[in-house]
Image (cartoon, rainbow, N blue to C red; front, side, top):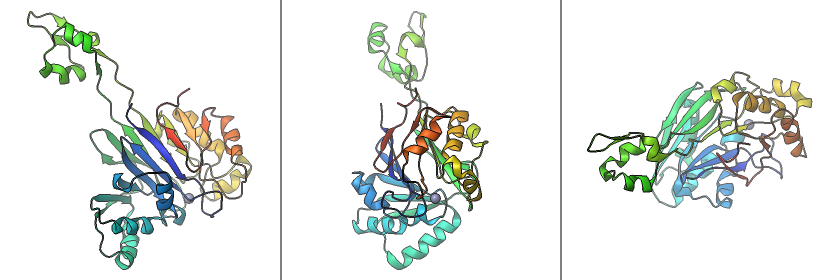
Length: 308
Ligand SMILES: [Zn+2]
């Protein structure tokens, strides 16, 4: 199956600790890299994960808090050093472009590549549409405007059964239609149904990235049955009141969203620095949603092989 995997580069939250890197995730979709948030140190973590800068085409920011964006000026300046050219698109709110342009005007005046800002709004919308992938935002509820991102692979074509194609002497020119679901009509008028010529397509896979937000029961329906859901678990349930006051979620609440959405698996993260044992997030979440995975820096998660 084509590559669709999630690299966790940072799953800490606002306060730096020796244990965690601030927020940064990279989606590898068919060897195209999409970064979500770019906390301090992201460019170093990116290299440690052996990811390649020329493959990075898009950076999506969830919101303009320092632990999600302060790695961006450094990364954008570094990319100018190689002189490699290419194009990079940063998806962010209007203020995000204004702030970044100011910094770059001073520190990295002459970029050797095309830097483009795509202005998004705190709403539900499609922000990227390619022949094989759609990325859409969902509005979140945090202390500042915030969105989550959902990556959805487009439906794939059916697999050709080579032996049957040969047996029925299907002309090469018709293979495209057959892959798309067409029947084959022989010269004598006999119809060979598509099901006899093809097997089912691989299922289209999906990933949702939800950070940062207060618990939103309505999110489940908007996200739907994604294969993998990252949902922030900043706090444990014992600090639910603080989570609410700070517009964050607990592990239990993230699990409720995963369960109600019908997600295949839940990935934890955005851990508050007060907790020293991250396994507690998983234990708490698993009481509600069994297929919860413990996130950590360096973790690689394959989307679509996770349903139990
Ligand atoms: Zn944060």
